Length: 371
Image (tube, rainbow, N blue to C red; front, side):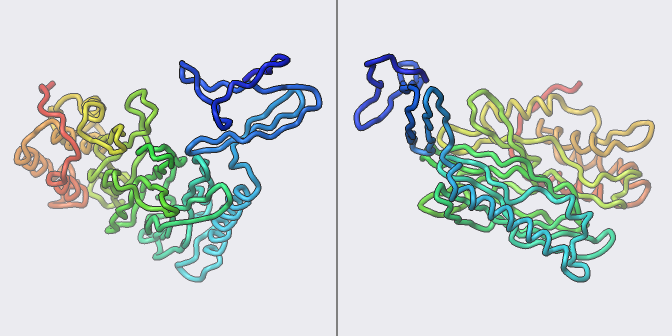
């Protein structure tokens, strides 16, 4: 952006359309003169900016800063805070304690996206059970607020976790299908579930089209959590997930020290140019291959202090990814059940690993040489 020389005309196309130059760069010549004031709207297919010119200075602002949009986002945030406050006024096990409330993720926060914003919003929060069976239930919705402050929403789903068991990272937006509307990825992790609970099957990507919010049809099917990854330099957000290889354990899982959650390695879903995601293209398989670079010499990993649960979980899934035979893996788990279960005939940890033997692999990388 530069000031215009005297008598120089702004370089604009027909109908006030500002065109990119041969290098793909947008250049706008602005007449900066003492006492001159002007407001210029710059609009793309999916976003809008306001250029405020005041004398010899100029400021470019996203049009989402307009009062109606800002007020709608603040109202959504206030609504979420009120619902959390209301949950602390409930009676009995449904009441959410002050300590539990401090461990809740941030909800109702607007993420700018083109001509509007996305948000993940709370519609209901309540507790249930006590002690080891204590759980919090979240009813959540995906919200889209347009530039004029109009709100539309669709249910995200119900998540039940142990207190502190839900983590939500910053929302990520990108126009995956190149239709002029940004899609939304909700990166979340279920770090602790109550024993016996099953994770909700939630759509990882959402879209806004024809005035409605809906699950993005080209997204992969995932449950149990996901994160945003960047497998290459194409600027398109990719997805990482543990797929079906996640187990939420109680204190009596069998091992001497039981983590609240155990996982295999991450699988990757690479964003394709057509708006879809692939777990089996070169980029996704290369990332998985780095996580599972060679077949483990043994599945069950032990150290001087006992069973290494996390390494055992990774070994088991990587062995499958690298083409190990199911029967061989099942035989080793059976032979090492005493290590997995602290001498007991069976336990939650061994049952989880045995279930992983038959879970569908999102991708494989083929055989690899043993170390």
